[in-house]
Amino acid sequence: MAPRTDSQSLSTGSAMSDTSGESSIDPIFHILRLIPFSFLRPPRLRLKLPSFTLPSPMTVFALILLTYFLVISGFVYDVIVEPPGIGSTQDPNTGAIRPVVFMSGRVNGQYIIEGLSSGFMFVMGGIGIIMLDLALDKNRAKSVKASYATAGVTSIVIGYVMSMLFIRIKIPGYLH
Image (cartoon, rainbow, N blue to C red; front, top):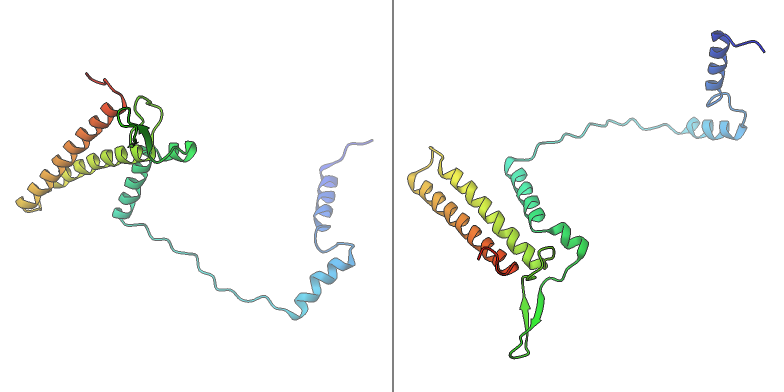
């Protein structure tokens, strides 16, 4: 058998592409293709591309801060493991059931409230740093600068002290 030349392969390739639409043998295909468009006309659409506007900087900041809060508070852990919202323990003296917010002694586990409260403390410290940055603006009045600086330092101190308290409750004997 003789090898094909390039002209033979090109002619067979073009014949194969013609069989897809117009030269079909099936008469029902022709009827279904021609009859509806003999009396129906497709509409003239005047479509515009949608225009997207960028979100404002405060919207982006709020979304990033919310995402930071969810990641820091262990939202993914809470969804996967499904821990209880709050724990309970029995008081050894009275026998009464007391609510427990921190899963003491377990570093790898948390209650939902524990994660949310520690995440809130981290976010509060971060907002305190942002307030300290706002206190350095030269275009603000001195009283506003002092208010931002006081609120920023207070937020950072409260966030740090409460986070350290949470760690001491979580891990008894830590840093002693």
